[in-house]
Length: 116
Length: 112
Image (cartoon, rainbow over all chains, first blue to last red; front, side, top):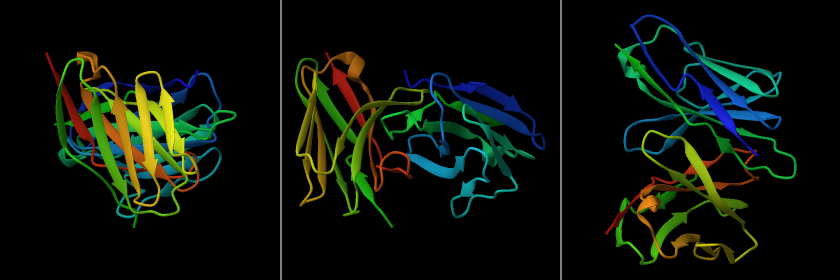
C-alpha cells in the first residue's frame, strides 16, 4: 500500500511553454499533498502544501502564479509550471499523506524537468 | 526556523554496519523519519520514530533517538551494495501530515 505515482517521469520543453505534472495516490485517499523541488546533490525544498478542495499554501519565495497547484480530488494533485525558463529545470517530487491510521508522507518517484 | 543537519558522506565496506547521524533543533518535533533516495528516484520511507521512543528496530535497521541532545541515528546492519544511496532524516512537529523539514542528506557508499 501507500503508492504514489507521478507523470511524466521526465519532460523536456522549450522556454516559455507550460508544463503540467501529475501526482496520484494509487491506493489511498490523500487529504494533503506536498510539492518539493530538488536541485542536484541538495536536499528537498518544500514549495507548497495542498489540501483537497482548498487553495494551496505556498512557502516563502515560491511564486504562486508561476507554480500553479490544483488538488481537485483525494487522489490527484497537479503542478503546472507556467512560462517555464531554464532556471526552472529541476527534479520535482510530490508526496501524499492521509493514509488511514498513519500520518506519514509517501513520495512519488519524481519528475525531471529540463527547460531548453 | 527548524534546522536539520547531517554529515554529507559515509563510506563503509560490504558486511559492516553503517551509522548515519542527524541532529535537529526543533524541540517540538514529534515524529522523526529516515528516507532513502536512489539516483534519479523519489524518496522511499525506511522507518520513523515517535519522539517518546528511544529506539526502534526493523530487520537490519535500528533507529536511536536521544531527545535531550536532539540526535537521531540510523544503523544499517550487514550493509550491502544495494544500500548505496542518499539517506535523508526529516522531522515533523505534528506527524507527517504537517510539513517535513529535511536534513541535507548523507551519501552512503558501500564498497566491496
